[in-house]
Length: 471
Ligand code: C2E
Ligand code: CA
Ligand code: CA
Image 1 (cartoon, rainbow, N blue to C red):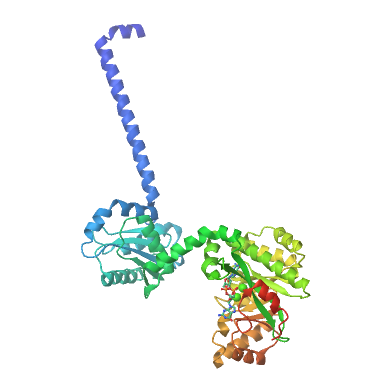
Image 2: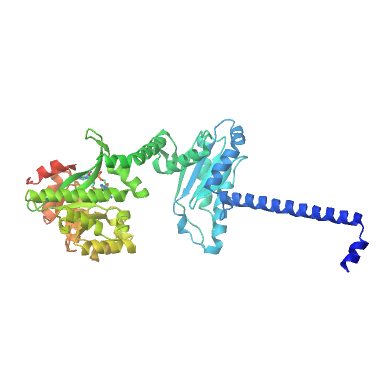
């Protein structure tokens, strides 16, 4: 049968068939390639887009700035372009249901789009931050534009929600050269944190921001070598028993020193950075060991003291087992009950399971726990009914002004009286003057005192000499 058919088809027809088949194959091939190319473009594009707001994301912002650099600069005839970052700090507070989330983000991002000129555009660089490039607007004009955006934000009536008042902080990086958009966007974001030049809630980029960022990078890059070379060391601040005037312990506070022993960085300069990148765990463990060494030396000279050390949330949360701590106490022949671990009140307030479990393990092993900075941030008096700490350290904020006014005196008195009923030790921090001390003597002497009046934090060797002092 097939033979017959083939016999009937001439060579011309065969050629035509082959040509048609080949053409079909080519068309299919081209279509497949185009489809693939389109797919690649889509994937690339989606990497640069924020699906909720349908605007470019952080990477998309940088890419667009690179791509449109010439046009943006050309459009900035009188004034160089500026990067503007709007940070909606309480954005998480609006909840309109997950189905309306896209609409919410589109409505918000449209607020920034209104009034934009050619070559200006808006992007969403993370959950709560929107990034804009603006051209040819001087500081006054830009301020007007920013305030208008904030005004419009607060006029939105959200479906199923109503009106909302946004906490907006705005960073402005003026005269941005667009030479390296990736770094420039990063610096504009850092301006939200480190700006020195501020006009209300509008923060302006200046050299200070770059200096601060460079300093943090330098700190970060040199942390390991500083640790190895012994430049990260403990200082100790004595704690005095108000009743007896004796030094009964001390708090270990980390210092970063230069080779000549002078202070290079105070903890406020590096602790927050190391809390964000995890290195604080190494520091906390090092200071914990330092506390053990101090206790061992004190024991050798016949002093029975309690030494405290600070643990960040991160250190606590990663304390799956406390064997490592117990190995250190055993190494130095220290009883865990001589060590107090200071944890800030705010950590107690925002508890999570890992935190609670770590506190429990530490206490079961015999370590003391102190709630640090009581009253400094948002306080939760319900914590006082709990039984998770042995000491409460009242924050230095209350004594900053040496209890100069009746109001301050009354607040201090009532806090101390309140805490006395909790049944744990009380330590008052930041005692700087005799005036302050005189008043506190009339309130309650069953407390520990710590502050510059007695001593600033001092090197370990000096602290050991302090142990026989009676105030
Ligand atoms: P903190 O734990 O509340 O430590 C008390 C801070 O108050 C210390 O600052 C101390 O020098 C200062 N201070 C003490 N007495 C007075 C006073 O009479 N007046 C005033 N104005 N200040 C006083 P420092 O050493 O700079 O430490 C700052 C913070 O850094 C500490 O606050 C603590 O939160 C953190 N930190 C220090 N060392 C460590 C550490 O090893 N690990 C962790 N995680 N954090 C640490
Ligand atoms: Ca502390
Ligand atoms: Ca404190």
